[in-house]
Image (cartoon, rainbow, N blue to C red):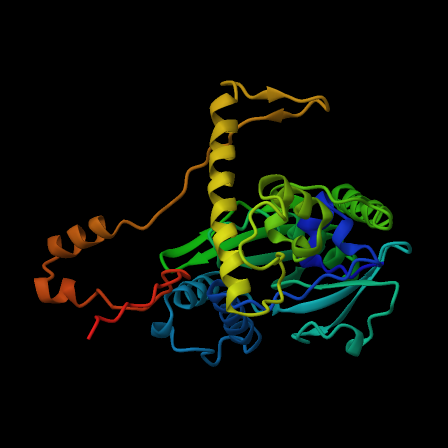
Length: 349
């Protein structure tokens, strides 16, 4: 059976294909500033919590997201908090146990057995008959972590012999901390979560890909047959060849191969945007009722965004000078995307 950890819960529930034993999922080694930022802040938070806040993991003025995380920890911290506890869960036997704390995802090294599933919670606190589980997120969208939080609550409660769990998602950004409402699970709800995931794991072998919103969280997309079909449907492999027959691949052969993929990726994005808009335009006001009883409708949500204009207005109201306001603008360099530049033609002598 393919590998699965608690952080894979969202993808597992919606598509079991990546976890089949015959599917080799390529490791995502592409540069990611967002991923690096999240990893750094999680590491700082874990060190800060497990040191019982006696030492600073990082100077707070070095990163706004970390400053907000540290501030939230200061406000809510309890002596019972443990950061990065790792657990092993046996779905068949419905048992769970702790493997260690801050073990850097080295589950087998710390005793995980082949038939067990393992994962790490961001923060766990055991108080009375209740386990409190906190899941941290540093991105704009952390709703997918709800599935991870559910299985973390069920496994942590089982491992500590408790019959009640309270889970909470907390989003940290440069602008502040945004905790979601806590969710409480009683003994029946925890048993239902275990059964749901155990049943899903039993369907892994032989499962087919199921495309959807979860695909953007899945590392198997480059080898997914449904993804290949989708690309071929928009851009047939042999229809737009230039001088050389290239294919889409994570292994980039040379500059010409990179250029071939880049040009077609831009075309695919354009087609994607137009197809998506066509679907939105055709969707009835109340959505489409589907054959399985569900409804396809455009969702709406309220997003909190930082307003620089309001912040500057407040600073001026409080007496900030033009020089002080201007000093807040810190230049930084970011990628403007890959592009092909034409060589300059030299002037005739």
